[in-house]
Length: 257
Image 1 (cartoon, rainbow, N blue to C red):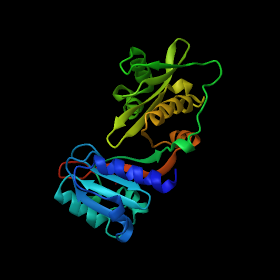
Image 2 (cartoon, rainbow, N blue to C red; image 1 turned 60 degrees about the horizontal axis):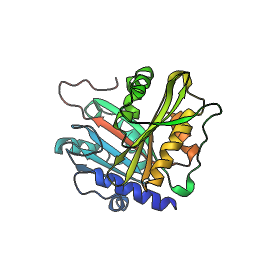
Image 3 (tube, rainbow, N blue to C red; image 1 turned 180 degrees about the vertical axis):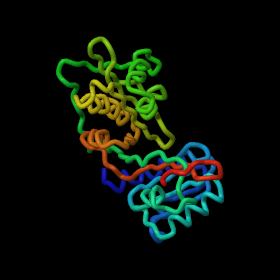
């Protein structure tokens, strides 16, 4: 699949998650390739936050209200899509422009069937399928910590969860949540003591293969370089990034000095 086709599929996914009409294609034709819309119910970010999705040379921003939209347009007035997230999170920004909180940015990568490079399970280990509600997965989440467990979101998987057991317990697992727009949002979790052994690649490969067989578009969202490298090794292409920010308001501390 050509990169342009994969990018078009990603456009459709995020346009579907918006609650107001948006178009990456139309925004690409504007100066800078950046547009801000007011979308209080956007599926791009938590309620009350602003969500930024950059795909290729286009960035769309969903603001929770008109006041936030006006401030974001002011902040991004002389910015291109490529530098939008850096501009919005710059520590040197004027105090009234600094967000109160930030999530991300995280890279967004997508997989075409012809690009897929499956990974084998490391020698001596076996892959098993578990239901989302398996107690073994809850143990893995506790061992991995709340932040990593929340990012993986295994309890929300709509697919089987593909897991590796070692020494009598699950040490790595991956699944996906089916999103609108026929996308499969991959989630992966590996126990801290078992990282850097190829388990994320093996379980992520299994979840990706399942999604492709189901005719879905696998999406891999990652902040840390190690996770991004795993995605690339499986054939995912990084096409953009996602950022969520909570606009500053009276009574909320702002980030930065």
